[in-house]
Amino acid sequence: MTPITTIDDLEDALSRPSEADVEFLRRLDGDILILGAGGKMGPSLTRLCRRASDAAGTPRRIIPITRMDCDLLDRRQVARLPECPNVLYLAGRKFGSSASPELTWAINTLVPAIVAERFPKSRIVAFSTGNVYPLGATGSRETDPLAPVGEYAQSCLGRERVFEYFSSRYGLRCLLFRLNYAVDLRYGVLVDIARKVYAGEPVALTIPAFNVIWQRDASSYALRSLEYCAAPPEILNITGPETLSVRRVAEVFAARFGRPCRFEGDEGPLALLNDAAKSHALMGPPDLSAELLMEMVADWIEAGGASLNKATHFEVADGRF
Image (spheres, helix red, strand yellow):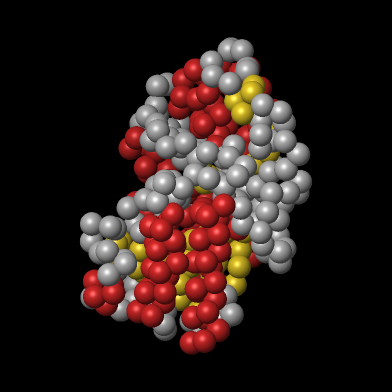
């Protein structure tokens, strides 16, 4: 992979479509509406869709909608959004959910109802999270029982249930996109651990393991998941194939940076883990391995690369974000 040394390099890499993306957009009919396009993934996903569509030679609109464009809690504003056969639904609230749980529930459960009412004939890929699963010793599969911990995770299950209701009642074609954890070089679990090691701060071991996926790969899966929208909803776990040890990852970064590695807390027996074998079988494995991602993160930090200063709080076990 071409070295990433600047923000422009990074933005280019995050939005560079794969041949699979381009080929998919040769088959897909219609415009693509991206709701919640102002978050961490939205801008690069929007650009990836645009670049893939242009490379496919298929004229279409890519329509990003941010909070500045439309208040998704306002039915009148949502009613004015253009008709669109393909919807990527990224809207949601996580951080700060403990301080204002009523807003978290409104955004995570009322907005899906408003959007589903507005786009009953569209295909909708609805972003969700692995937090709907219980903590466990192995990766959860799409068919496993759900047991969300804390109000954020409970509201995310509420989001899924709303889309399921509209799918069963009205035939809405959708896909529940259970993602954890996307990594940009400016944020993500690998970045959280690497920056703590680099700064000489202790790394918490409460949650002992995790999964990650390069954000570009996650965006590619989101786009191509439009092909699998169905009624009742399809469900896909989206993450990398590796289960990574927090302790081991911290030690790798410590060796790379030539700095001591410090830990705090007891190493817990359970973690939030996803088994994404189903999505990999449908769409192929991610392009970037966790090992390469770690090298890229270390290079970026050593070079003084920017940070979004948004911790993932992956070490939180009680669901309070």
